[in-house]
Length: 129
Image 1 (cartoon, rainbow, N blue to C red):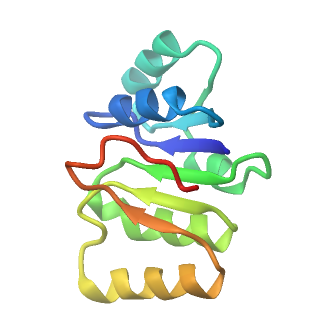
Image 2 (cartoon, one colour):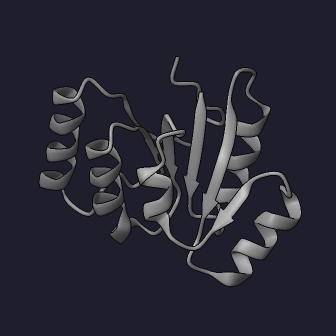
């Protein structure tokens, strides 16, 4: 399974490290708006494409699933766009800013037959299979 990661701030490096270590998975791209975060990601993972625009990850036909590890105020918009583009989604907690947004995303995932997962501190590894 090919992954894209959006967000390489505080928790992003942990998510990328765990995804890279999963047998059968590959991280194809990391997106972050911060130039400093992108430089850290590129240094740690020189073989992974590192970009500033999350929409490139979301629209990539080569990516099957997206890990969203960005600030909570971005979760709804990014998750919705990922689902609308046919991607399975792992999103860092909190899931959304309010219940209505969360319910909408859950319904959208069900309609599109996609998996959506919210991180929890005991879930240190993610494997959508």
